[in-house]
Structure formats: structure tokens, C-alpha cells
Image (cartoon, rainbow, N blue to C red; front, side):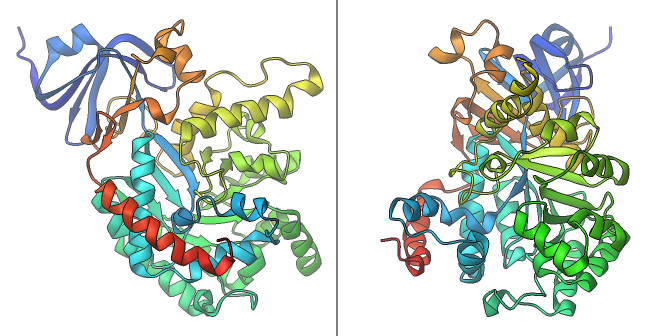
Length: 456
């Protein structure tokens, strides 16, 4: 008889939703983990016979699933949470918000502010089951990256890059050469393979010159990096492209030779059906956000079912109704896509119950260029695992744990989180962030930062 193999950790006797290619669900399963990766997933009895570990995590009355992936967030806007509802309540909000509020707010952030923002965002994300994030880019990215590493999260971080606008604060303006240099430095300082990866970033075509766009693309392609950019987010962007370049944004990017797998397009709301096919043919990935429904009719299901790499994103704490809970984002997307596609053809089940959560796990992994590495519980994937408590009144009356996951679970059910095999949340408590200190510091600093917007 073969002796059991020793691994680092075993999560035993959990209800496991793997999100693998076959959609495997195990009612009594276990997960063996070694060196930060999943060694095996299977029936609890089989894992017990084959493996032993010094650390055993009791998965009874728990649902195990892959860590959620926030495919588009703004770490720099974490302390803007609640600003827009207050402006609206007092009749003070002005448009466009990206020019009037978002960029001016980011322009006032110091390196220490970015570290605090990252710590605050990480505490929120981890507590709600998000193990990986893709930051669209803010100031002081090296401060963000260092803070992120300390939290134990997995993430991709960019530098907000603008070189072609006089309507932004001086501190956010860059020459084309400065923008290129900073993007290259970040990617080279944080190469792929670690928990934190450097990414290149372009804010949007309205404030990035064609020279910057093409050069960033070339430098990213040479280094195997992604380029994070907002695309097809607003009608003003389309009008701008048509007026300046004589074509819609995607056609402009195709003609520049940059519309390929290096590009990660946030929002992508105002896409035509033939635009969706261009995404499929050329290879860019998409981040679909719940707040897309505030200003357009998003085609998330069309991207997903056409095979376009698409994940879900919060868009950060400022513009997502304050939510960094990807369970609630997925729930909103399920409702939004059902409303988008169902009523017009009288289809009551236009989107499958778990389809949005698939986008938030394996879809996000594909969009970030990490397919098979994260987003599913399978052998050789990294051990990014979330355990949900099934003992709540709400969960315990569901027909099955799977049905609760897709029709009721939220980040408040998260009990335990592992990233790369390391436990970072236990009993609902974040272990890698001094939450009380961070919250106290953020409350004070937030008031100072938003005072310029005449809210109080």
C-alpha cells in the first residue's frame, strides 16, 4: 500500500464548486495544497487516502469555490466611496464626472495615500472573497504595488497614463516620453509570475495621443504585458473618435494595429454586434462592470458566448454604488443581462444561474491572461480558494449549496480565504491588514480629500 503523500494544507469535507471545464461539483470533497498550488481536488475519502498535511482546514458546512477576480477596479478612488450619492442628494453633481471629480481626486493623492487606499481596498476585497484584482492605473503605482504585496492579494497594477489633454490637473499630465518610461519601469519592476504583476495602462483615447497608444502597445507586446484601457465607455468617446479620426474607436484602434490580445478593454458598453465579432477575431479582453447599466445596454452575454475573454469588474468604490463585493456585482449582472436579452424575445432564462459567477472566476482569469492558473479549483491551479459559511439562516434553507451560491450568496458569507495557499481571512477576519488602523486613518484622510468638492 502506497503511503500518503505529504502536502502543506488540506481543505477537507467541503461542498466544492470547482468552476472547471466540466462544471464539477463535489458534495463531500477535499483539496490538497502544496507550494501555493492545488495538488488534487476530489472526493474527501480519496484525498484522505492519498494525502496528509500538517494543516487541515475543516470544510464541513462550508462551500469551497475559486477566489473571485475583479477585472477592472480603481484603487486610487477607494476613498471616494459615497461622494456621488452625497453630491446628487445636494444637487451639486457636475458632468463629466471623470474630468470634474475622478482625475482631480487622483491628482491630489500622495504615495502614502495610495498605500492607504490599497490597504483599505484589500481589506474590503479579501473580506468579500476577491483574491485577484486588475487596477486600471492610478498615481504612485510602486506604492500601490508594495502595499498590495503586504496584504497577500494577487493583482495587476498600472500607471494612469495621459499625454494629450489640457483639461486635466498639472500633476497628472505627462509627456509622451515620461508616460512610456513609467509604464516600462512598472512592468519591469513587477514581472509576471509573482503575486503582483505590472501592467501598462492608457486612460482612454480621448486623452492619449496616437503616438503614446502605439508605443505602449509595442512595448507591452515585447514584454508579454497587458494594456488596461477604458474603451467604448461613453458616447462622448465615440463622438471624439469620429470627429478627430473619422471612425469609431475600435476601427481607429484596429487601423493603428493595437487592437489585439494585449488590450484589456474596460466597460466596452457601446459595442455593435459587429464590434463584438472584432473582439473575437482580434483577441482583446473585456471587463464588464455592473455600473455599465447606468449609461448603456451592455453585451456581456454576447462577448461571453462568442468566446471573447471577459471578466467582471467593480469599477472601484467610487462608481459601483460603493461595492467591492463581486458576489453582488455578479448578481447585478445576472439581472442586467436577463433584462437586456430576455424580455424582447420572451426568454425567461436568457442567462444561466451561474453564468455571471463563471465570468467572475474563470472568465476573469482568461481576461487577465491567467486562464487555468486562477479562477478554477483544479490540479496545478494556484490555491486561491474561498470558503462560504453555509450555516446562516439564508443558506441553510436553500435546496442545495450550489443553488444558494448562484441565488443568494454575498461577500458577507465569506468565512475563509486562501491566496496562493496562504490563509489571509479566517472566521471572516482579514489577517493581513490592520483593519482598525486603516479604517481610522482612511476616515480622517477621506474628509481632507473630498473637501475640495464642497460636499460637507
